[in-house]
Image (tube, rainbow, N blue to C red):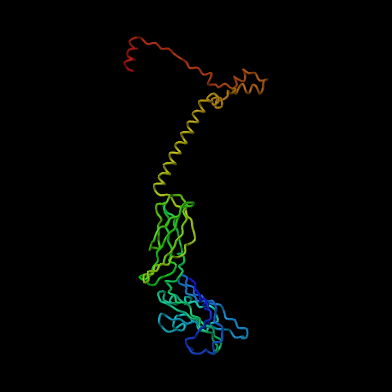
Length: 340
């Protein structure tokens, strides 16, 4: 959050004066420098930065320096030096004072009422003080989106992990709620939350679908019952994985589909065999072959065919088995049969 000092409008007949508390009743002769213009306080997450426009002097070669002071509610003004606030903003040439730059412990307490004032200085000369409106960090801060967002697709779910926009020292007085804006790509946006945890699971999502999401933090300050809604994170999209039931359905569908395909192929083959049986038989029928002796005779017709056949005939073809008939007397024949 940024806010700055605005010039007061003059009423007719009334002249607006800026008085220095230390010189009431008379003008400070050393207040001859112009005041720094357009001071702004930036409160973003843990940042506490005061910035302003430089004072330009045409008749001086020395640089203009600046002094920043602060005070809490109903307290006196303090110098912003290392001893008091951890950051040196006394007689600096820069046009910015970052109260959070030195260390994590630097800066003002986030639940304190803080007022800042600023002036320009050049040697013994100085400008009038410019006082900024008071602020409380938790009341006026601009909350950024959660950081380090990691999304892990699960079985019909998305698991989201992230870190807080900034650290809160005492979570009993202030803490973050988180909301997740999500939608199926091309669908209607839904919001889930609030959550205290930095790990959120979006369940009951459709498998194998692309979901987009944004994460948002909300700061709750118990002391004043103040809610500060933060910025949404960048949109990111992820595809969910299949759950156990979906995987089983896929296995069943693949098995049924494969079996059905095999049945269709087998039926088609059987139909083709029946329809083109003659053609298939013709394709797979072995053509008649010419005997070797005839083939040799055709190669050399001068050779007598009978001699070629005799030449190639095997001697085993001329072997004859001899058959002998032996007769036995009737009595001997009966003895032989009994013996067998």
